[in-house]
Amino acid sequence: MKILILGATGPTGRHLVDLALRSGDWVTALVRDPEALGEVADRFTVVMGDATSQRDVAVAALGQDAVISALGQGRSLNPRALFDRASAAVIGAAKQQGVSRLVWMSSFGVGDTFESATVTQRTMYRTMLRRVYANKKIADDRIRASGLDWTVVYPTALTNGPAKGTYRVDDRLQMKGAPRISRADVAAFMHQAAHSSEWIGRDAVITD
Image (cartoon, rainbow, N blue to C red; front, side, top):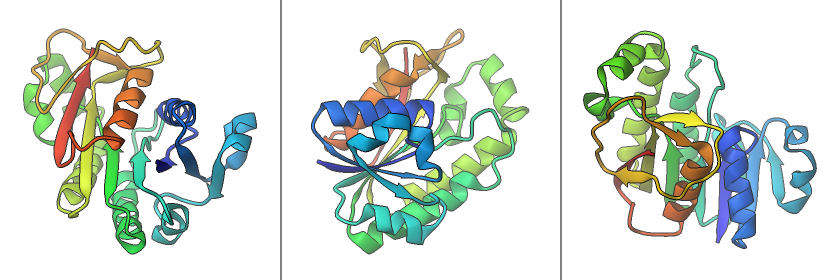
């Protein structure tokens, strides 16, 4: 399968690249700084560009079977319209190049998933993460209305732990305590979802 990965230099994106390469996929990564990939960049196609530019995404999306986005903004609490702009660029580029499959990573607590959050989670989502989550909701809603074969993935708090393979994933999950999920497990699910029709047109809430 030919896969375009967005956010490949981030912690979840790096797991996605490794998984895709190990499974025999043809991988393309759109990155602003190819040097951030290190030596692994020699193992797949790297396109230099910006995920918020439809033109750049379209160049990277040519000939692909699927796009997987693990875009993030690190610890910044100012979204700068990243997810809004990137979703518009990706949808436009996918349609331009005839790529129908899109797996998009959002965050638990965005949109309707807020209703299943714990009291502690809701407080954080309403305050510290309010601006980021509002921007992500715009992106998620746009993707659902895009007409593409989309899956929007909603991981709980992300950790750098190893993949367990025993995570829970469903359209809705009621939360208790302080739910977390490793980036490695999220990447594994997203990679699997891109290769399957099971999660097309569905939200996927994922946690340990």
